[in-house]
Image (cartoon, one colour):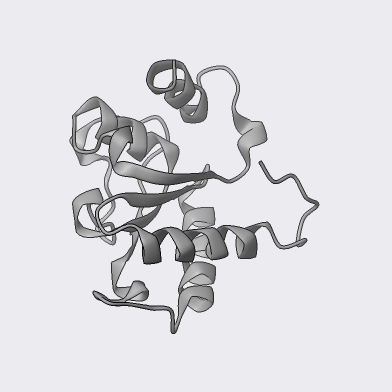
Length: 140
C-alpha cells in the first residue's frame, strides 16, 4: 500500500513494480486500475514512457502493455471502446475497474492469473463503485 500526496511518485513506484513483475512472470498479468477512462489513458501514457527500454527475453515490455477502457458501471460486452484491447492480448493492462469486473464475471480473466493489481484512486472504493464490487465479490 502506497499513500502519497499528488505528484509524489506513486505511478513511478507502480511502473517499477510492473517492470519487475513482467520481467519475472511469463504467464501472469499486472493490472493497473483507474476509476475513469481519461485517467486510464493518462496513466497508460506514463507507463509507456517509464517502461520504454525495459526488455524481457520475450521482447519489449511496451509491446505487452495494453489499454482497456469502457463505460462506468457497464458490465455488458459492448462496454469496450474501439481503442481497447482484450486482457488476453496483453500482459500488463491499464483498465477501468468496471471492465475488470465484467471480465471476471464472464470468465475472460481469473484473479489467479494476476500477479500484481495496482488500484489508483482507491479512496473511491465505496457504495456501488466498481472498486467495491471487485472487493466484495472477488476478494472474499
